[in-house]
Each structure stands twice: as C-alpha cells, then as structure tokens.
Image 1 (cartoon, helix red, strand yellow):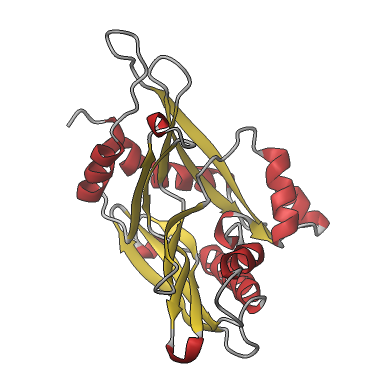
Image 2 (cartoon, one colour; image 1 turned 90 degrees about the vertical axis):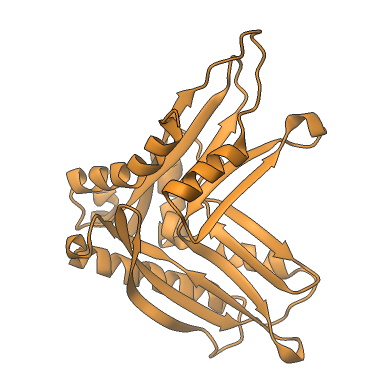
Amino acid sequence: VRDRVRRGDVYQVNVCRVLSAPLAATDAGAVVEPDAAALAARLAAGNPAPYAAAVHVPAATGLDPVWVVSASPELYLSLEAAPGGTASLASGPIKGTARTPSGLTAKDRAENVMITDLVRNDLQRVCRPGTVDVTDLLSVEEHPGLVHLVSRVRGELLAAGPGLWARALEATFPPGSVSGAPKSSALRLIAELEPTARGPYCGAVGWVDGDAGRAELAVGIRTFWWEDEGDGGVLRFGTGAGITWGSDPGREWDETELKADRLVGLASSER
C-alpha cells in the first residue's frame, strides 16, 4: 500500500483479514445452524455497541440464508424524514483506534479527516447543494476495551421517494471508512491484495422503514457470519486497519488484533 501511495495511486487503503473457526457437527453428523440470537445476546452483555444487530434467515425457509451477528460501533447511513417532504441523510465515519485516548496519534487524526472529507463528498452527490455539513469532527468515543475517533456528516436529500436507496447506495457504498481514498483506486487495490472475500463484513447491516421514511444502517464491522461448509460449518470474523504513508506495520497489525480480541474471546468462551 505504501508503494502505491508513493506512486500517487492512493492516499489511504483499508486492508482487512478474515479469521475463521470450524464449528463441531452434531452427534448425528448433521449441520445445524448455530444460534445467532444467543451470540448476539452474549456480545450485547460483554461488548455493548450502538449499532449492534443480528440477522438470521434460516436455510429451511427456502429463501437465501443469512446468518450475521454484529457489534458495530459505526453508523453508515441514517435517514430521517422531515416536514415538507424533505429528509436528512447522515453518516458517522470511524477512523482512529487505540486502547486509550492517549494512544491516538496524529496519523489517526489525519486519516479521520481524510475519510470524513470523502464521506462529505459522497453525501454531496445525493444531497442539496450547500446542505452537507460536518457536524462533529474527531470526537473520541469509548467502547469496551478501546477508543475510536468518530466524525459526523449530515445533509438534506435532493429527493426522497422511489429510487432513494438506489441513489444513496450508488453514491456512498461501500463506506469510505472500510475502503479508502480515492475510493475507486482503493477498491482496485483491495481486490488485488485481499485473498479472501469479505462477505457481509464491511457491508451494511440495519433496517429501513419505508412507510415512516426512516432508516439506520451500520457499517458491518465487528461482525461474525456463519456459512454452511459441511460438518458444523464455519464461523468467520473480519478485522482490518487503514494504511497510509505514515503507517507502521506492527502498529497496524496490533490494531487488527485489538479490534478482534474482545469479540472473538466472547464468541469462543463456553459461557
């Protein structure tokens, strides 16, 4: 990544790795989907998160199966209808992670500002000119075992109604915090470097109420997903870090372990 930064291709790339653990099959050898609600409850007790979620559509329903449990601290998009048929769209990018506030560095702050600007530009594609504002910059949020730098961006939508989500997702997906800047160049480099598909990790997890004109979608970080691959299937968890010219490889690797440590420990414990 630093070589590509040197060449001027990118400024920042979020590079991720996917951890996996096989689950035991039943005594009869049948694959049984694990209890998503039980894992969600365990994470809620041991690692409460503002955008936690659990989505389970069993394969037995005949629909495309989904098994995702997330303890996400990050807002991807929220939609709030306003009087007069208008609506506001907001995002809360996270960039900068450390065990304590004193561990946050100048690199973390510069990276957060860079990605906040990217998110601001994304929202400007679907919001009224002059309405997109950074309402909060470089706030320190404390979460179990670590702290994050969080910024907030909000704008007034050009138009709500049919086609809203097609426009919003086309303009903003994938989230800037889990891709990089410039986004298109970062995504090409991610495709070259990451040997494993991210699956639902780093995607969008949440709810949309079309009747009320409200929605809240989290960035799918701190997220587990299960896949039926025979025997007991495989439980996966993704973790990553933003790489810039100022990155130190050891620190970035440690950051990926810090993000995973508590949640993987909760998922792995017997009670």
